[in-house]
Image 1 (cartoon, rainbow, N blue to C red):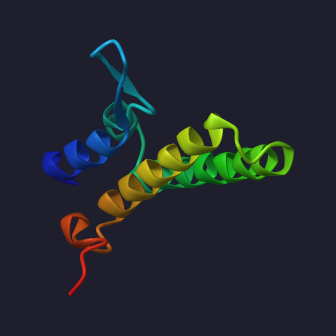
Image 2: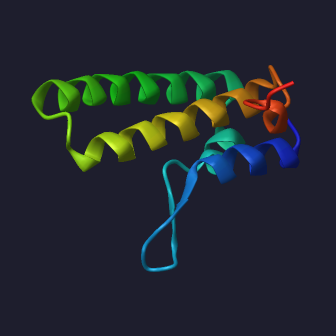
Length: 98
């Protein structure tokens, strides 16, 4: 796996904070140094499933919760990181109309 792919995936998993800082959802650079990419992808997919359960619970409890927006954003970022690592598609082309 190239460092460019790792950087792209990590960029998806890094969120700007209100204090002009950055927060990593997950540090996959370190994980990929110690574990095979297949294991890291499985971890990300497990994390995504956990977020789906949390999202469902938020929606069932109160559809106006701001946590719903945050959860959806995290789920999108994790999905894009998975796609970047798997290399299924060019990440830049995802979502573009043809």
